[in-house]
Image 1 (cartoon, rainbow, N blue to C red):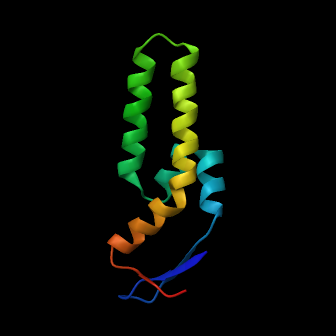
Image 2 (cartoon, rainbow, N blue to C red):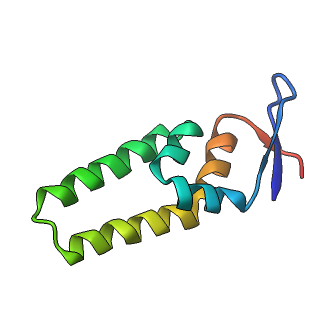
Length: 91
């Protein structure tokens, strides 16, 4: 768990392991809700590419694997997003 603070206005936000749960349960909608649009578009492009091929077990498993991988990386993606926008870690 980390607490981040916006130095311009003092707003604070906590980034916890629940990022994993949110991304795993809600997938692409969790990324959109958190404003991580680059990752929303990456996932949409991957989905569009995989659905252009005939639906088979391999393509479906790649989508599930991508979803799980993004869920595992959700905490770090969210942290890096805040830090790159100038937020600082306070705890």
